[in-house]
Amino acid sequence: MCSASTSTSETLVTGSRKEDGKSREVVSKKEDEFGDLKSWMHKNGLPPCKVFLKERHSHDSEHRSIHYVAASEDLQAGDVAFSVPNPLVVTLERVLGNETIAELLTTNKLSELACLALYLMYEKKQGKKSFWYPYIRELDRQRGRGQLAVESPLLWSENELNYLTGSPTKAEVFERAEGIRREYTELDTVWFMAGSLFQQYPFDIPTEAFPFEIFKQAFVAVQSCVVHLQKVSLARRFALVPLGPPLLAYRSNCKAMLTAVDGAVELVVDRPYKTGEPIVVWCGPQPNSKLLINYGFVDEDNSYDRMVVEAALNTEDPQYQDKRMVAQRNGKLSVQAFQVYVGKEREAVIDMLPYLRLGYVSDPSEMQSVISSQGPICPVSPCMERAVLDQLAAYFETRLAGYPTTLSEDESLVILLHW
Image (cartoon, rainbow, N blue to C red; front, side, top):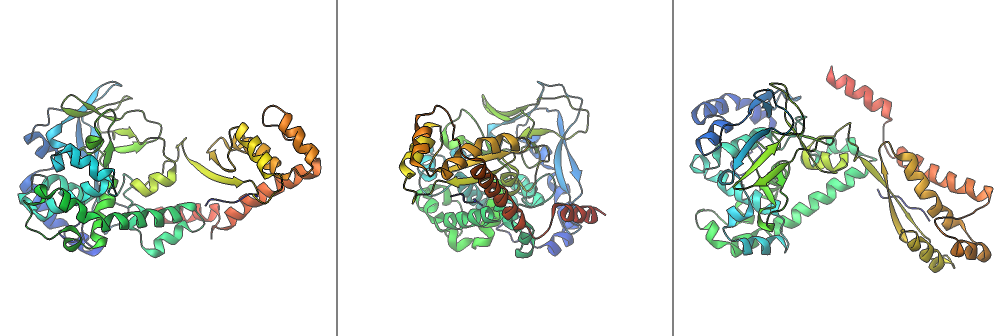
């Protein structure tokens, strides 16, 4: 009755870890030649702003440090930290030059992320000739890592993914990876539907120019930095904004968002900052599993973090139809997903119990009493109540048993790794 839910020149993520370590001196010389990202943006229309780029060392000595956006002066809530003009923002409207084609592509089989990733992959093949070279170089430096300097599990090795054993997140990672593969098989659609765009590139069609693993790395890099703009056309709703994520840190308890204004995308801060403090923005109401997959980090203060408990009425129950009707009358489905939010576990269990009790009703007269009652009332005997509670406890114990280590063992490992 109750069931559980459980580098190469083509890529935007620079080569292997060993290559990454050896290439730091070369990359440093390139940065001296072209200037940093912010300098390039100022040369191309970025007005004076109140932020600068700082450096944070990577946990992995073989990876380069990452950059992040910090306040260049003391800020107050309501201050505009920066305003990036539209010519420095990458959207499908800008990439494809035709909003109709952009909407057609993204309502068919390809996501905005796939189209944006493909565009930047071709731009990277242009090397220093590309207008976006300084921005692409910065994305390479970040390697699809969030502000904890950790890659999305979409790029983890098989051994690293074993850390997620027992968590529903592991299945989500595999599902997302399969989705990326499906999009890869549709990439040539962009080439044929937007031929005018790709005439400037003397390269092969996408699936011949880029192996799947290269596209996957680029997709994850774009995923980590794409911004969802509100109150704009479909072709502009997903944007890549230099100075935006992953240079901006995401925070679940923050309300500041990158916003489309007349001719630009700006950030108005929601809190005071001292000079040098990292600037944060809201990441939307996402649980930590999504934050980890999308951006490579988790937020310990995430009030949106949750787990899903899926319960179902037994379709072979002779009184299934009556129980289904009662469940629907009280806003529940025959297969119901209960959201258990962090800090609100008790409320979630109280919400589950009437539904679980309903599954244990067997006497037709008791069922009629339930049907005639108002609200989620389902009287059961003390013995049945014990069975309901035991079932729920066993369900959670089973889920916990799926993890190869205990919470205390995991915390000890984290402490050891920090040392």
